[in-house]
Image (tube, rainbow, N blue to C red; front, side, top):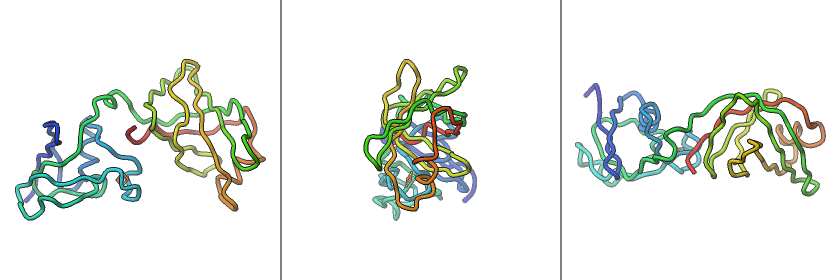
Length: 185
Ligand code: FES
């Protein structure tokens, strides 16, 4: 079987998927934000159940929408989050505005984005921070604020690559890069 496959969400929204892409890829491409985070099959957040399918043998199966490439039309136990429809992931430079050491091995970074960047996100989303070629994901610790500062929390990991760049050597005013927001909320 080739061509378009119809995916129905539990609240009745429908979108088309191709056999060569995952359900999550198809959903996001067509503006349907369903629950997800890592997109790589590791966090388990996108796990859902097949509620109905052309092929009855797969009904009831648990799948990860970020990994599962459908072979027939099906209904899944996932919801569409209207709240995320206007939120687009982007790559942006950011400046370290402030560093607050909470303890010897925990610190908070406050990032400031260029004024032209409209970085919308919802509580619970995360971003990727890129510092001198090292990229790691961090939950955004602050609610969207008027001054647009973004707060991230770090726990020192012994011999961690990012820890070696964040603790001690980093200073206010340094430029980094962010990619996000990512995930649902
Ligand atoms: S397992 Fe993390 S988004 Fe699918």
